[in-house]
Length: 237
Ligand code: PTJ
Image (cartoon, protein in one colour):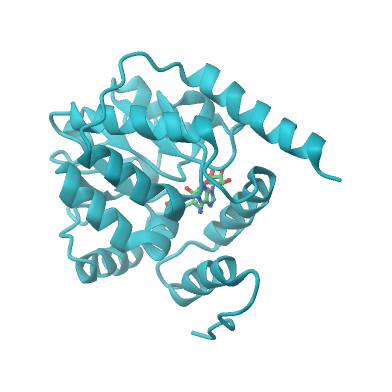
């Protein structure tokens, strides 16, 4: 890995790029484009966890705490950027971790399984024996003892089609997505509009605190995020 200098003003951001490049065999090339889109939205947010995102984190934690069979669905970007943070959340919440890929190949699933293993998690995904109805091709594949039987599922950085299909299966769906306008953000039951590595520790802490949230309106929360971005932009000189 070509490490950026630690005193670089954008050190964290450059390190994230390095992690994705270093895991090139496990990350889809399309994942690099997706990351760039995320970076652009993070600039608009001021690279901070905004107050409505904090509300969404508490609502997501409450759903995970109340779940019978919670699952964290991870893809190439998520494992490359946050394997340890996912492992920690899995440990605290009791959620299983499943590798579920949009651009699925057996080689990528095996590489990502190894990376999650290095972080201390025995991830599901290699022995797929079920399908997400309504999706075609490799991206429909999942595990019956993971996503197939989950009641609550956290799917960070998800594609809109699959998020819709999971909702249609009757799952309670939580996503993490920096783009409040994406189809995934608009379709999930709880959308945390925040950067993955920044919000996962906050989510884990909130699960540990036993967060209880009864009424959460995702559409209203997304409006608040958009309001937050607009206010910020209108104040920039
Ligand atoms: O590993 P695979 O094969 O499953 O593929 C993974 C990607 C990410 C390529 C696939 O799921 C995909 O195409 O996703 P999308 O539809 O581009 O959606 C990803 C969303 O995540 C976009 O809205 C980005 O803005 C957002 N995003 C990217 N990086 C981050 C992020 N959100 C939070 N934190 C990030 N670090």
